[in-house]
Length: 135
Image (cartoon, rainbow, N blue to C red; front, side):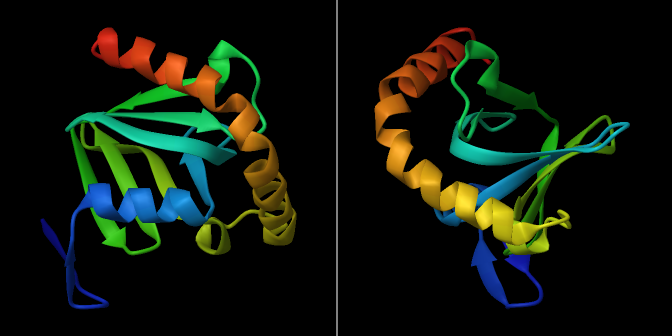
């Protein structure tokens, strides 16, 4: 459990990521260029692996895994995933992701809420496959 200094609230990375993903979040993958994906589904596979599915995705490659050494609670709106002492990705609220047009992401999230049930079986199979493979 980590202390979230700004709020003085004890929260685990698991609790914060689940809450973020439930209300609409962006996976900011570090790289050149940096990539921003609307997260349609998110689950912890273990203490050092998370599974996430790109909202509006329809292919197996849209189910992704991040492997990391540690997760860091930066605040209740941003979690960092760190591997080899470098941040590899952030899960962050739409409002705080720094995307060009957050309103577009909010609309896409609302639409995803309507179509996600049709993808739930597919996402569940991908999640199970990654869980079986040990991520």
